[in-house]
Image: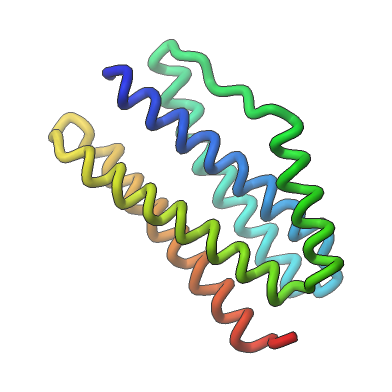
Length: 148
């Protein structure tokens, strides 16, 4: 694996770890059971993504990035404060923005992996892209069906 590929894997590990913190904060601050369950499910899925990237990085004998605690605290406290001050509806809008950025990054990385040797990874990235699209769909659906 070349250095650029490893760098990209590390970027995605960091992105997914941030999403885990973001969605975990949503779940922990939720009072609505349905909302809480949805975000717990998103945490589970995003954690699987992060674990996958960490595993590949580790197998390449590279160091898995240490996501600084303050970054994760920032994601968690920001969201916790946001939910309290602007509500679930607007916080879901923020989630859509994050998912859109993740989807853009996945699409770009998939395009970069046209080499046959990366076919398995490319297929998994497409699965993860679909997960991000499903999260976006749920967030938008929640916004549309639960206006402030």
